[in-house]
Every structure is written in structure tokens, then in C-alpha cells.
Image (cartoon, rainbow, N blue to C red):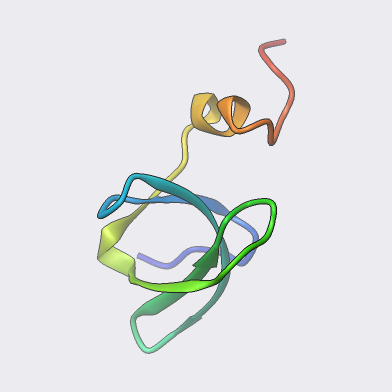
Amino acid sequence: MTYREGAYVVDTRSAKLAQVMAQADGSVYVRPPRGGREWEAPAEALRLATRDERVAAGLTGGPR
């Protein structure tokens, strides 16, 4: 699977929420949503973050 830059994902190896920064050769480069050290994850170890996960991290408004 490919993810667009800026998408919020969860690294299933660590359960960490992250933002996609770039992709290359099957690897996805992600970082914590509010900045921090970037890390590399295989695309198959990522899944899109749910709305609830994004809300819990303060990245979007609550329910409408």
C-alpha cells in the first residue's frame, strides 16, 4: 500500500501515531505528528490512523 505525504498512520510495530513524510523503495519515512525524530517503516507495518486516534492526539476537532 502507498500513503500520501501528510497522511496520519499508525506504525503497528510500536502502536505509535505518525505522519508520512516520504516513501522510497517500499519504505515509508514517518515522524511524530508534532515533529521529532523521523524513522523508517516498511509499508506493510503501517495502517491509516482512525479519526478517533487523530482526535485523541489533538490533530482534529472532536465529533460534529
